[in-house]
Length: 174
Image 1 (tube, rainbow, N blue to C red):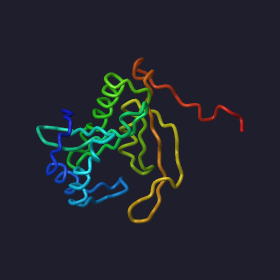
Image 2: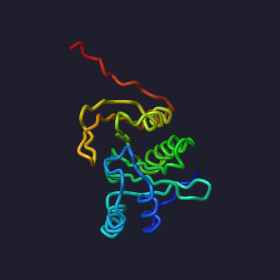
Image 3: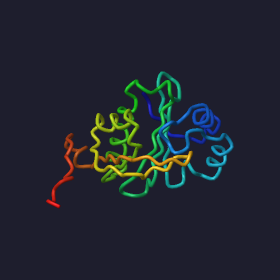
Image 4: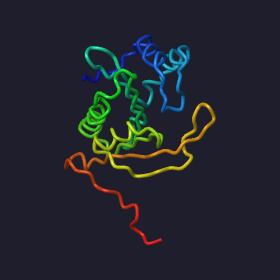
């Protein structure tokens, strides 16, 4: 696997995003013109960094790091259907931690996913992210339905010491 900076390869991005379904994202199908307009308006660059995920010489996904200037960025990870199930999600999350902690001096990384996205939840756990929250009715889907959301996070100290600190979900006796 290789991670490569997005350099306005608009038609490659249109192909990747529009020829795949994104079942666990708010927008399951993406419009080609919307992607072209987003690139033109700077969506993939302004306050963000976007990277290609390359596997066996093919662009099989993207990772968009949002709020890149903040000390606590969020991200959007998308792998094509054919790329899923190969362990790439975990590898990308390890790369993300190395990049954001090692090069960008971030203190925390947060990721949200729908509660029913079991594959992504497994990726988070296997990559050393800790489940920190379960948010009821917090994910609005394009079709008008609402799903529960799970929050996972990684902190700099855990990355630095190669450990996972458990959360204190029941620390108060209320």
